[in-house]
Length: 516
Image 1: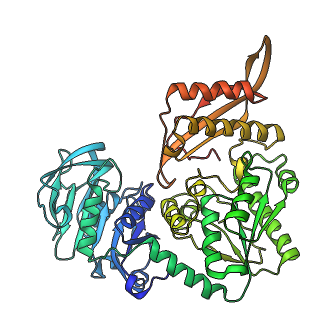
Image 2: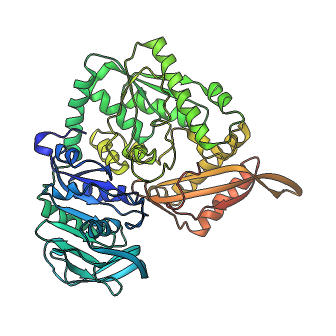
Image 3: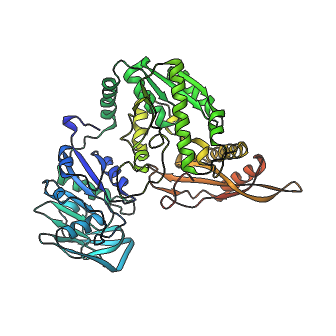
């Protein structure tokens, strides 16, 4: 994103493959400072060109003394701007400046008590002792010249370090996670050292983005892929505010929607927003292409291609349209390996890496730099109703990613009806608004049930309910047993083809939220 001159306060997080790299960027944004990820090997010149006022080195799974460990250019430390190394980032600084990092005989995982040796700069206003969260097997055993310890734990004499002259800081723990209760204050203190002003506000983002879209599109026509979820809805309203009647939204029914979803989306956008909206039924084409396909990545690629085919056909009939707008978010880009980090690709998002090379549209992705919680704020600013703002996320490929194995009509029906029951029961119990996502998963596994007095073999339905802020990390929700009991009873009684119900108790990581 190109920031305006008065909004150049930016902190860049160099991604060394940590599962929490994205969380660091989010936490910095929560402090009111714009932050984004960059690959660990980004050049110092590129960082200088982006006018970064601070750099954070993320953690990572490697050991700095390994032959192929990811290493940033040492020129990063010669830019004259503050640098904070977190976990692997601390060890990398120690290693690059001539200190020593070794495999620790006393590894630290979980909570630890940090004794603050210097309550200034990084620990300003935080007192003499802090609870922090550790996750490391290596440790610094000798600091380079110019560095000093400013925080220690029982196992880490260099749990926090500093080179005051070069404004280099390192912490062995993770301030970005909730398990470090005062971690946000530590990050705010670092931002103060950087001289960053709190200028990242969603209201300013909306005004700037509207102008940006207006200039980008000019007098051309835009086709917006609308699913009815908060991401695509926000993108549509934002683009409509910028270009008005130059926008046409298209709702593609791919046969993999939630129960009653098509009717609800059409009503909301035609009645509330008064936008031009085309309803295109392509269920037969999507499901035909998915027949016999079991690989989840292949499913996503097929669905991405079929979406573009549908948009292209619609443009030919109602166009011409030069732009395709969609609600791509920053996590979509990250999980599709968009940062160039040593982290592996988690899954291909159909609207990022899943787009075919032959696509003729120019892409318009106004939310590409935002996380989900930021999108919800933008949606509220734009006046989008809470019924959409607070909807649970629903993947673009729809039920296809909640059906393990081949997508069949019977599995679609079981998955759709069971998911509807899950959401209904959570609404009745007042839990729906407190969780991030709730749905049912159906695979090929079957189990014997007894319906009436007859033995029947049916599908095993897995209920998935998670709590999250941005979908990059998530924890399984501790739903009361009585609610789970009602869900189970209703699914086995009301959903033809379902005989057993299980509950998923895996968090992200190591699991993902969606099964595929």
